[in-house]
Length: 356
Image 1 (cartoon, rainbow, N blue to C red):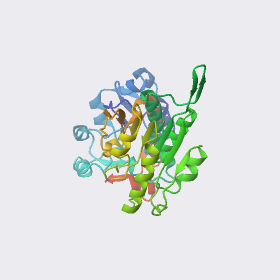
Image 2 (image 1 turned 90 degrees about the horizontal axis):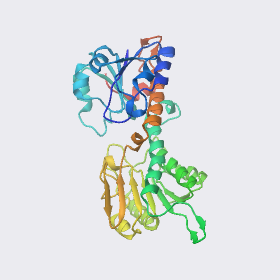
Image 3 (image 1 turned 135 degrees about the vertical axis):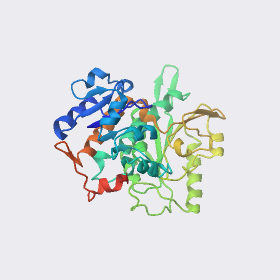
Image 4 (image 1 turned 60 degrees about the vertical axis):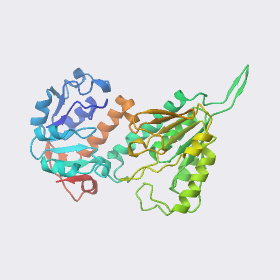
């Protein structure tokens, strides 16, 4: 049995379509807690033919595998079967002690945010799925809060110049933000310390802000690495030059297991035109500005600073669909004909296992 619970977020871990695929292709039944999919647009009736819709305790007591968007509470895991397999995004590099708590509850936990970003793992890469949606929504949010419009417009009263949008961090979220801002008609620039990002940024029609002297990041698995103080200072000066003239800034820069770097300084915010917007997707780990607060909208010097590291949750139906597909592909790695067989020689399973 695979179990899905009602969570505090708006998403649900498995969509009705994926529940059917699990039943037809993997030979396992799915238990869904009543109301689990409601906020994602999936009422209980949508699950009736592909899963059993039951009470929360039944899900916990009967499931061999628990699938969730975010980690469940320690109370839930304590009520689950001993040795239950839990799939979620546990973030063990940020949440100290979570592995020991799961081990004490006899939970075999796989954390999908630990999966390396490789070609082999693309089908199970939840971080990339959610980052893509977050980058798209960040631009829409910035555009709606900004005091100016994005595209150039020719009107009877005169011409409106296109807005300047700066994307800091050209990973999955940043690239989607670039594409979205370009579609809306903005003039887009992007910065990233990863040299591999330049070609991708330019292919989307944005200007790549390049700072010479970055450390080689080819072995970092797609993540940013810590740079020298000299480079960081040059980086700050270049960002200041572009950011102070920007109408919208989207920041995405994070270092796994460390506090997010301050990339938009106080002096830069002070130099920006009032009515401009900063959307900080690194808010959960401290933010890329000193004023960022997770889940809050802060105004400083007339600049609106939006801190939200979980913007994908504001698009619950599509984000649930993507998460469900990622989980289905992950389940295929060790479930066949209704049987569980975990082969730790599989590099994806090996990288994501945090408690055995």
